[in-house]
Image (tube, rainbow, N blue to C red; front, side, top):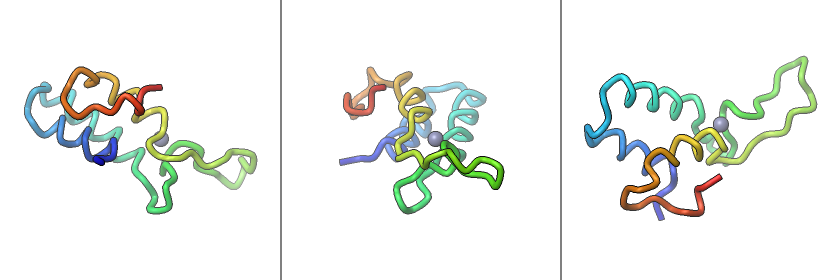
Length: 82
Ligand SMILES: [Zn+2]
């Protein structure tokens, strides 16, 4: 099964989106990538002053919301919906 980030990158690679929109969506993908342990690198990231935040599993809600813009395309997994 394709993961959301891989599927979304494929949607952005097929030139169906205007360049600036695709670039912005790729930037969001880069910010919200998997840290290798299954956690989003942006959402829930802890700082020294913020000890109460919990890590957020990937795909995070930001990527789920982004993918919803392409929900009518082949391969979209309804399980990714918010
Ligand atoms: Zn995130």
